[in-house]
Length: 111
Image (cartoon, rainbow, N blue to C red):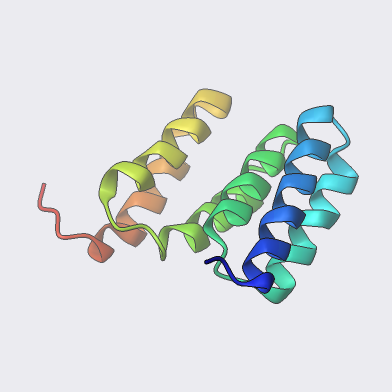
C-alpha cells in the first residue's frame, strides 16, 4: 500500500508535469521547486526541472539538476540518458564531458 505522503507527492508531480506539457513553464518550475523543497532527492522532479531549464536555455542549471538526479541512479545508462538529452538540445560536448568526468566515479564502470 502506498502511503498518503507518497500519493500526495505523486499527485503534485502529475500536476507539475501537466503544466510542463501544457507549456506553462513558469508554473511548472514553481511546482517542481515545491516538490524539491520537501523531497530534494526526487529523481523525477530533478530530471524534469532539468529538462525545463534546457527548454528555457539555461544549460548550466539543467546540468546541475541532472547532476543532483544522478545520485539516485543505479546505473550508468540512466545517467548517460540525461546527457544525451543535453547533447540533443545543445550539442555542448565540453559540458557533457566535464559532467561525465565529475560523476563517473559513482558507477562501477571502467573506460
